[in-house]
Image (cartoon, rainbow, N blue to C red; front, side, top):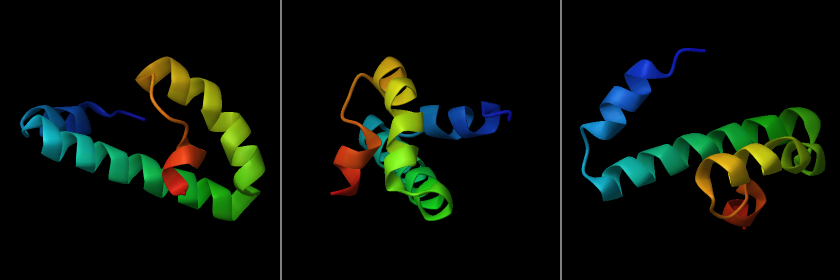
Length: 64
């Protein structure tokens, strides 16, 4: 998956708008995976990537 275009769009926005857009995309991914494989397995799969890439709360924390 090439995320170059998404990165270009997000970097052209102010930080608050970029953070909101990026967060919305990640939340949508979490919800889609959760509907396909369940929230527990989704959390397990995304936890390490989320912590390593963003250093913030996990996807499950954002869904609450």
